[in-house]
Figure 1 (cartoon, rainbow, N blue to C red):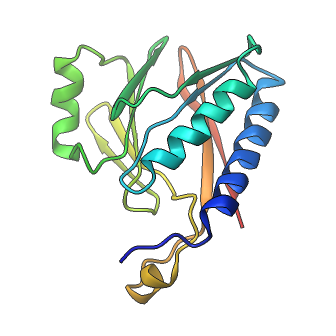
Figure 2 (figure 1 turned 180 degrees about the horizontal axis):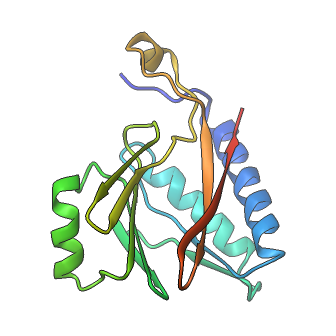
Length: 173
């Protein structure tokens, strides 16, 4: 049985506070688009969180929230295609062909995924596949099987013509 490392109320509150603080920081200096993609453990909680963030920023023209429940999302910006998916629904070997079929390939192509809870980077031609940290802290079940990671989140900065130009990470503990 897989359990959360904190109770529902505390994890929701911590996630909401983190989201608002990060979006506030980014949107104070540049237009900010926030894209939510559900995973395999938290569909309901993520929907509530993204709805709360969407309501909070509904009158802020500098913040756009994408919180529909599509399992994969493309975000095209200049010469960049950013693709988001949890990954339990799409395998690496299928990514380039899917992007090609859906006509989303650009000069810079990035696929961001979750699911395995630790960071990895791989390249497939002109596609960079990046597995992102899990924001969750490992619980006792996961520690028992040596699934160890730091609860982190990251933000990526992109230039319309030059692809990814920066990133930063933040531990949630």
